Amino acid sequence: MLVLGIESSCDETGVALVTMVPGDAKPTLLAQALHSQVQMHQAYGGVVPELASRDHIKRLLPLVRETMAQAKKTLQDVDVVAYTKGPGLAGALLVGAGAGCALAMALDKPTLGVHHLEGHLLSPFLGDATPSFPFVALLVSGGHTQLMRVEAVGQYTLMGETVDDAAGEAFDKSAKLLGLDYPGGAALSRLATLGDAKAFALPRPLLHDGTLDFSFAGLKTAVMTQWRKVGAHASEQDRANMAASTQAAIVEVLVAKSLAALRHSGFKRLVVAGGVGANAPLRTQLDAQCAKLQATVYYPPLALCSDNGAMIAAAAAMRIASGVEVPQKNYAFDVRPRWPLAEGAAIAT
Ligand code: KG4
Ligand code: ZN
Image 1 (cartoon, helix red, strand yellow):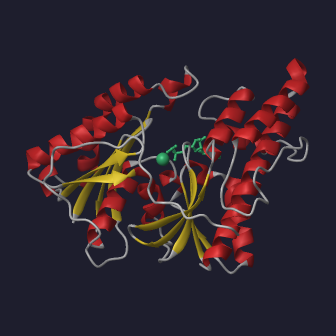
Image 2 (cartoon, rainbow, N blue to C red; image 1 turned 30 degrees about the vertical axis):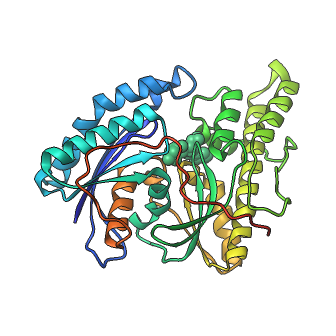
Image 3 (cartoon, rainbow, N blue to C red; image 1 turned 180 degrees about the vertical axis):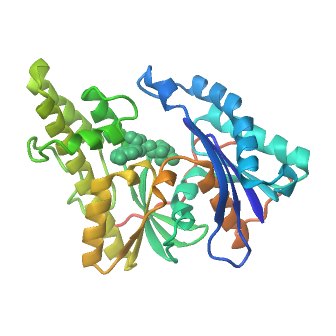
């Protein structure tokens, strides 16, 4: 089964082709092409939705051609066209859904609308070391911070999530304060390597509240207040120190809550996915702490941490292969800009 995946929920246009034999545990990535709009949005300090949609329109079909050429396949070889149905920016999602359904209709092939977070959650199955079910998943992207109990493909329970800003947002907003370009998570992390994480005392929100929820809005305000105190005379070392202190605060909370979720579930496997999952100290600390619990941490290949078409194609292939979903020749597409992946369960740890 050959699945073409299209991702266009935010500021990356991603296309990929995966193959999966029903009965196999994991899909195989054959080819992928990606265009990041980050440079275009940098001038505005954040994603401009209308510009994002227009750029997706421009990039999508050339990326489809590039992917097919890389895989040495023709569009007729494709069995299913999958696209991100939500959550994300409405206009951006419509581009991927519209193009995907038009393509499928022209080819007389079925389509499948995929949940963006399910794509992230299942993306480690595209790596070498793949988890088996069940596991706990930490989803940390620019828009989401969630802990999920994953029993099988399509069986997800929300264990906890952010009550305000996402971890990625906390990285990005703090980075912006320090004068780093959008999206500043990776740049803040690089700057942090030169700084002292104890230089600024920042809060660890909800660390001991006994739930698996997160809150990062207060941390952002604390960074802002303390940075103002340093004032206009801040040195390069001050900037690095603030970057290190901010990163340490975010990472400490993410690690502590992930461990609590593992203990609560009794599972010995943790999957980390989403852009913030590329963060080096987060990975180091999770690996070390989980090893103490005899638990293993699984990550997607580094290149697949941020948004891409491969995770959408993979999630579709896994849903179909496991019988959770039958793709339909339904070309009356819709998108769901707001779409919870799973219902929540109140959890005390
Ligand atoms: O999953 P993603 O690519 O897009 C969304 O679906 O949101 O995540 C993007 C987020 C941004 O907030 C970005 O700053 C953050 O991931 N990010 C990082 C790192 N690389 C990307 N945050 C911390 N450290 C990194 N190395
Ligand atoms: Zn994402």
